Amino acid sequence: MKHDPALSGKLIDGKAIARRLTDRVKAEAEALRERTGKIPGLAVVLVGDDPASEVYVKNKAIQTHRAGMRSFMHMLPETTSQDELLELIERLNADPQIHGILVQLPLPRQIDPILVTNAIAPHKDVDGLGEVNAGRLSLGIDGLVPCTPLGCLMLLKETLPDLRGLHAVIIGASNLVGKPMAQLLLKEGCTVSVGHIDTRDPRGLAREGDILVVATGKNGLVRGDWVKPGATVIDVGITRIALPDGKTRLVGDVAFDEAAPVAGHITPVPGGVGPMTIACLLHNTLQAARAILDHASPDHKAS
Ligand SMILES: Nc1nc(=O)c2c([nH]1)NC[C@@H]1CN(c3ccc(C(=O)N[C@@H](CCC(=O)O)C(=O)O)cc3)C=[N+]21
Image (cartoon, rainbow, N blue to C red; front, side, top):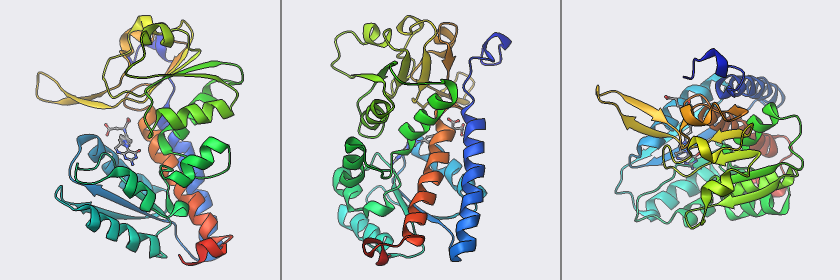
Protein backbone atom coordinates (compact mmCIF):
# COMPACT_ATOMS: atom_id res chain seq x y z
CA MET A 1 0.00 0.00 0.00
CA LYS A 2 2.94 2.31 0.60
CA HIS A 3 3.64 2.17 -3.15
CA ASP A 4 0.03 2.97 -4.04
CA PRO A 5 0.18 6.04 -6.34
CA ALA A 6 -2.94 7.43 -4.64
CA LEU A 7 -0.86 7.79 -1.47
CA SER A 8 2.29 9.25 -2.98
CA GLY A 9 1.26 12.84 -2.24
CA LYS A 10 0.38 11.91 1.34
CA LEU A 11 3.60 10.22 2.37
CA ILE A 12 6.02 12.29 4.42
CA ASP A 13 9.41 11.19 3.12
CA GLY A 14 11.51 11.13 6.28
CA LYS A 15 14.39 9.52 4.47
CA ALA A 16 14.71 12.33 1.92
CA ILE A 17 14.22 15.09 4.52
CA ALA A 18 16.81 13.43 6.77
CA ARG A 19 19.27 13.20 3.90
CA ARG A 20 18.96 16.93 3.22
CA LEU A 21 19.51 17.73 6.90
CA THR A 22 22.53 15.41 7.05
CA ASP A 23 24.02 17.12 3.99
CA ARG A 24 23.62 20.52 5.66
CA VAL A 25 25.21 19.21 8.86
CA LYS A 26 28.09 17.80 6.84
CA ALA A 27 28.79 21.14 5.15
CA GLU A 28 28.67 22.93 8.51
CA ALA A 29 30.93 20.34 10.15
CA GLU A 30 33.45 20.95 7.37
CA ALA A 31 33.27 24.70 7.93
CA LEU A 32 33.81 24.16 11.66
CA ARG A 33 36.84 22.02 10.89
CA GLU A 34 38.30 24.76 8.71
CA ARG A 35 37.82 27.33 11.49
CA THR A 36 39.06 25.24 14.38
CA GLY A 37 40.92 22.21 13.00
CA LYS A 38 38.61 19.98 15.05
CA ILE A 39 36.20 17.24 13.98
CA PRO A 40 32.91 16.81 15.89
CA GLY A 41 32.95 13.55 17.85
CA LEU A 42 29.97 11.55 19.09
CA ALA A 43 30.21 8.83 21.75
CA VAL A 44 27.46 6.22 21.79
CA VAL A 45 27.11 3.91 24.78
CA LEU A 46 25.06 0.72 24.49
CA VAL A 47 24.58 -1.51 27.54
CA GLY A 48 23.26 -5.01 26.82
CA ASP A 49 21.17 -5.80 23.77
CA ASP A 50 17.80 -4.24 23.02
CA PRO A 51 16.55 -4.92 19.47
CA ALA A 52 15.34 -1.33 18.79
CA SER A 53 18.70 -0.01 19.98
CA GLU A 54 20.56 -2.29 17.58
CA VAL A 55 18.82 -0.86 14.51
CA TYR A 56 19.65 2.58 15.79
CA VAL A 57 23.32 1.80 16.41
CA LYS A 58 23.82 0.30 12.97
CA ASN A 59 22.30 3.24 11.08
CA LYS A 60 23.90 5.81 13.34
CA ALA A 61 27.48 4.70 12.72
CA ILE A 62 26.92 4.88 8.94
CA GLN A 63 25.31 8.34 9.07
CA THR A 64 27.88 9.80 11.46
CA HIS A 65 30.62 9.04 8.99
CA ARG A 66 28.51 10.33 6.10
CA ALA A 67 28.33 13.67 7.90
CA GLY A 68 32.10 13.80 8.30
CA MET A 69 32.06 13.25 12.06
CA ARG A 70 33.84 10.80 14.33
CA SER A 71 31.90 8.12 16.13
CA PHE A 72 33.12 6.33 19.25
CA MET A 73 31.18 3.20 20.13
CA HIS A 74 31.12 1.71 23.62
CA MET A 75 29.32 -1.62 23.78
CA LEU A 76 29.07 -2.85 27.37
CA PRO A 77 27.75 -6.20 28.62
CA GLU A 78 24.24 -6.54 30.12
CA THR A 79 25.88 -7.11 33.54
CA THR A 80 27.64 -3.71 33.65
CA SER A 81 27.23 -2.02 37.03
CA GLN A 82 25.93 1.51 37.49
CA ASP A 83 29.30 2.64 38.87
CA GLU A 84 31.14 1.28 35.85
CA LEU A 85 28.81 3.17 33.53
CA LEU A 86 29.13 6.40 35.56
CA GLU A 87 32.93 6.07 35.41
CA LEU A 88 32.82 5.77 31.62
CA ILE A 89 30.59 8.86 31.39
CA GLU A 90 33.05 10.84 33.52
CA ARG A 91 35.84 9.88 31.13
CA LEU A 92 33.75 10.91 28.11
CA ASN A 93 32.78 14.20 29.80
CA ALA A 94 36.50 15.00 30.17
CA ASP A 95 37.57 13.82 26.69
CA PRO A 96 38.25 16.80 24.38
CA GLN A 97 37.69 14.67 21.25
CA ILE A 98 34.08 14.06 22.27
CA HIS A 99 31.41 16.74 21.88
CA GLY A 100 28.30 14.61 22.19
CA ILE A 101 27.43 11.65 24.43
CA LEU A 102 24.41 9.40 24.00
CA VAL A 103 23.55 6.52 26.30
CA GLN A 104 20.99 4.29 24.66
CA LEU A 105 17.81 3.57 26.54
CA PRO A 106 16.42 1.35 27.94
CA LEU A 107 19.20 0.37 30.35
CA PRO A 108 19.37 -2.93 32.31
CA ARG A 109 17.43 -2.91 35.58
CA GLN A 110 20.48 -2.50 37.87
CA ILE A 111 21.10 0.95 36.35
CA ASP A 112 19.04 4.07 37.15
CA PRO A 113 18.44 5.89 33.83
CA ILE A 114 17.77 9.26 35.52
CA LEU A 115 21.07 9.14 37.38
CA VAL A 116 22.91 8.21 34.20
CA THR A 117 21.35 10.85 31.91
CA ASN A 118 22.08 13.49 34.55
CA ALA A 119 25.73 12.44 34.77
CA ILE A 120 26.29 13.54 31.17
CA ALA A 121 27.70 17.09 31.04
CA PRO A 122 24.78 19.29 29.89
CA HIS A 123 26.78 20.76 27.00
CA LYS A 124 27.48 17.21 25.69
CA ASP A 125 23.94 15.89 26.32
CA VAL A 126 22.97 15.48 22.63
CA ASP A 127 19.89 13.45 23.58
CA GLY A 128 18.65 16.43 25.61
CA LEU A 129 17.32 14.16 28.35
CA GLY A 130 19.16 15.53 31.39
CA GLU A 131 17.57 17.92 33.90
CA VAL A 132 19.33 20.97 32.51
CA ASN A 133 18.28 20.54 28.88
CA ALA A 134 14.79 19.26 29.76
CA GLY A 135 14.37 22.29 32.05
CA ARG A 136 15.59 24.66 29.36
CA LEU A 137 13.11 23.20 26.87
CA SER A 138 10.23 23.59 29.29
CA LEU A 139 11.22 27.23 29.95
CA GLY A 140 11.66 27.98 26.24
CA ILE A 141 15.42 28.60 26.59
CA ASP A 142 17.83 27.40 23.86
CA GLY A 143 19.44 24.06 24.66
CA LEU A 144 19.87 20.57 23.26
CA VAL A 145 16.47 19.15 22.26
CA PRO A 146 15.71 15.38 22.24
CA CYS A 147 16.37 14.01 18.74
CA THR A 148 13.13 12.14 18.06
CA PRO A 149 10.67 14.95 18.89
CA LEU A 150 12.96 17.46 17.14
CA GLY A 151 12.84 15.26 14.04
CA CYS A 152 9.04 15.02 14.28
CA LEU A 153 8.79 18.81 14.50
CA MET A 154 10.96 19.20 11.41
CA LEU A 155 8.70 16.76 9.51
CA LEU A 156 5.62 18.74 10.58
CA LYS A 157 7.19 22.02 9.50
CA GLU A 158 8.04 20.53 6.08
CA THR A 159 4.44 19.35 5.71
CA LEU A 160 2.30 22.16 7.12
CA PRO A 161 2.69 25.86 6.26
CA ASP A 162 1.75 27.06 9.75
CA LEU A 163 1.37 25.12 12.99
CA ARG A 164 -0.09 28.05 14.95
CA GLY A 165 -3.52 27.33 16.40
CA LEU A 166 -3.65 23.69 15.29
CA HIS A 167 -4.75 21.08 17.81
CA ALA A 168 -1.84 18.67 18.27
CA VAL A 169 -2.67 15.40 20.01
CA ILE A 170 0.25 13.35 21.28
CA ILE A 171 -0.40 9.73 22.30
CA GLY A 172 2.35 8.70 24.74
CA ALA A 173 3.80 10.79 27.57
CA SER A 174 7.38 9.50 27.83
CA ASN A 175 10.34 11.65 28.82
CA LEU A 176 12.04 10.54 25.57
CA VAL A 177 9.28 11.58 23.13
CA GLY A 178 5.82 12.62 24.37
CA LYS A 179 6.74 15.25 26.97
CA PRO A 180 9.43 17.07 24.94
CA MET A 181 7.15 16.86 21.85
CA ALA A 182 4.43 18.66 23.83
CA GLN A 183 6.88 21.42 24.81
CA LEU A 184 8.05 21.90 21.22
CA LEU A 185 4.52 22.07 19.81
CA LEU A 186 3.40 24.49 22.53
CA LYS A 187 6.28 26.74 21.50
CA GLU A 188 5.02 26.56 17.89
CA GLY A 189 1.61 27.83 18.97
CA CYS A 190 -0.31 24.56 18.85
CA THR A 191 -3.04 23.66 21.30
CA VAL A 192 -1.53 20.51 22.79
CA SER A 193 -3.22 17.46 24.33
CA VAL A 194 -1.28 14.50 25.64
CA GLY A 195 -2.95 11.10 25.98
CA HIS A 196 -1.35 8.23 27.90
CA ILE A 197 -1.97 4.79 29.34
CA ASP A 198 -4.68 6.02 31.77
CA THR A 199 -6.49 8.26 29.28
CA ARG A 200 -10.19 7.22 29.29
CA ASP A 201 -11.00 7.61 25.61
CA PRO A 202 -7.75 7.73 23.65
CA ARG A 203 -9.54 7.19 20.33
CA GLY A 204 -11.88 10.13 20.96
CA LEU A 205 -8.92 12.30 21.90
CA ALA A 206 -6.86 11.22 18.88
CA ARG A 207 -9.77 12.03 16.56
CA GLU A 208 -9.59 15.68 17.68
CA GLY A 209 -6.04 16.12 16.42
CA ASP A 210 -5.22 18.20 13.35
CA ILE A 211 -1.79 16.80 14.16
CA LEU A 212 -1.49 13.30 15.65
CA VAL A 213 1.86 12.16 17.03
CA VAL A 214 1.91 8.56 18.24
CA ALA A 215 4.72 7.28 20.47
CA THR A 216 3.51 4.36 22.57
CA GLY A 217 5.56 1.35 21.45
CA LYS A 218 2.33 -0.64 20.87
CA ASN A 219 2.32 -1.61 17.22
CA GLY A 220 -0.90 -1.02 15.34
CA LEU A 221 -2.60 0.71 18.32
CA VAL A 222 -3.94 3.62 16.25
CA ARG A 223 -6.61 2.40 13.83
CA GLY A 224 -8.18 4.24 10.91
CA ASP A 225 -11.08 5.51 13.04
CA TRP A 226 -8.63 7.21 15.45
CA VAL A 227 -7.64 9.67 12.74
CA LYS A 228 -9.39 12.97 11.99
CA PRO A 229 -9.93 13.19 8.21
CA GLY A 230 -7.11 15.26 6.71
CA ALA A 231 -4.92 15.13 9.83
CA THR A 232 -1.13 14.99 9.70
CA VAL A 233 -0.05 11.73 11.35
CA ILE A 234 3.46 11.19 12.72
CA ASP A 235 4.19 7.59 13.71
CA VAL A 236 7.10 7.34 16.13
CA GLY A 237 6.65 3.64 16.90
CA ILE A 238 9.13 1.12 15.66
CA THR A 239 8.63 -2.57 16.40
CA ARG A 240 10.34 -5.45 14.66
CA ILE A 241 7.85 -8.23 13.99
CA ALA A 242 8.49 -11.77 12.74
CA LEU A 243 6.76 -12.81 9.52
CA PRO A 244 5.56 -16.39 8.80
CA ASP A 245 8.44 -16.87 6.32
CA GLY A 246 10.98 -16.23 9.09
CA LYS A 247 11.90 -12.73 7.88
CA THR A 248 11.26 -9.62 9.99
CA ARG A 249 9.58 -6.32 9.28
CA LEU A 250 9.50 -2.94 11.06
CA VAL A 251 6.05 -1.64 11.91
CA GLY A 252 4.78 1.50 13.62
CA ASP A 253 2.18 2.30 16.29
CA VAL A 254 -0.27 3.31 13.55
CA ALA A 255 -2.15 0.75 11.41
CA PHE A 256 -0.80 2.37 8.26
CA ASP A 257 -3.15 0.77 5.71
CA GLU A 258 -6.20 1.95 7.64
CA ALA A 259 -4.91 5.39 8.63
CA ALA A 260 -3.31 6.47 5.34
CA PRO A 261 -6.58 6.85 3.35
CA VAL A 262 -8.04 9.03 6.14
CA ALA A 263 -4.97 11.15 6.88
CA GLY A 264 -3.94 14.24 4.93
CA HIS A 265 -0.27 13.33 5.41
CA ILE A 266 1.38 10.41 7.17
CA THR A 267 4.87 9.10 7.92
CA PRO A 268 5.73 5.53 6.90
CA VAL A 269 7.65 3.03 9.04
CA PRO A 270 10.43 2.53 8.12
CA GLY A 271 11.51 5.68 6.30
CA GLY A 272 9.69 8.24 8.46
CA VAL A 273 10.71 9.35 11.94
CA GLY A 274 13.64 6.88 12.30
CA PRO A 275 15.98 8.50 9.77
CA MET A 276 15.08 11.96 11.15
CA THR A 277 16.06 10.88 14.67
CA ILE A 278 19.53 10.04 13.41
CA ALA A 279 19.86 13.22 11.33
CA CYS A 280 18.83 15.27 14.40
CA LEU A 281 21.41 13.47 16.52
CA LEU A 282 24.08 14.61 14.06
CA HIS A 283 22.55 18.10 14.07
CA ASN A 284 22.73 18.18 17.88
CA THR A 285 26.31 16.88 17.86
CA LEU A 286 27.26 19.71 15.53
CA GLN A 287 25.48 22.25 17.80
CA ALA A 288 27.32 20.87 20.82
CA ALA A 289 30.70 20.89 19.03
CA ARG A 290 30.14 24.48 17.90
CA ALA A 291 29.20 25.64 21.38
CA ILE A 292 32.36 24.04 22.75
CA LEU A 293 34.80 24.99 19.96
CA ASP A 294 33.51 28.33 18.65
CA HIS A 295 32.52 30.18 21.78
CA ALA A 296 34.19 28.24 24.56
CA SER A 297 32.76 29.71 27.75
CA PRO A 298 34.52 29.04 31.09
CA ASP A 299 31.86 26.37 31.62
CA HIS A 300 33.04 24.57 28.47
CA LYS A 301 36.79 25.10 28.73
CA ALA A 302 37.46 21.99 30.76
CA SER A 303 36.54 19.97 27.70
N1 LIG B 1 18.88 7.52 24.41
C1 LIG B 1 18.21 7.05 23.37
N2 LIG B 1 17.77 7.89 22.40
C2 LIG B 1 17.10 7.40 21.32
O1 LIG B 1 16.68 8.17 20.43
C3 LIG B 1 16.88 5.98 21.21
C4 LIG B 1 17.37 5.18 22.25
N3 LIG B 1 18.00 5.74 23.30
N4 LIG B 1 17.23 3.84 22.21
C5 LIG B 1 16.68 3.17 21.06
C6 LIG B 1 15.65 4.02 20.35
C7 LIG B 1 15.37 3.54 18.95
N5 LIG B 1 15.78 4.61 18.07
C8 LIG B 1 15.81 4.52 16.68
C9 LIG B 1 16.25 5.54 15.87
C10 LIG B 1 16.32 5.41 14.50
C11 LIG B 1 15.93 4.24 13.87
C12 LIG B 1 16.01 4.11 12.39
O2 LIG B 1 16.95 4.52 11.76
N6 LIG B 1 15.00 3.52 11.75
C13 LIG B 1 15.01 3.24 10.34
C14 LIG B 1 15.23 1.76 10.19
C15 LIG B 1 15.51 1.26 8.85
C16 LIG B 1 15.95 -0.21 8.89
O3 LIG B 1 17.08 -0.47 9.30
O4 LIG B 1 15.13 -1.07 8.53
C17 LIG B 1 13.66 3.68 9.77
O5 LIG B 1 12.70 3.82 10.55
O6 LIG B 1 13.56 3.92 8.59
C18 LIG B 1 15.48 3.20 14.66
C19 LIG B 1 15.41 3.34 16.05
C20 LIG B 1 16.27 5.63 18.84
N7 LIG B 1 16.22 5.37 20.15
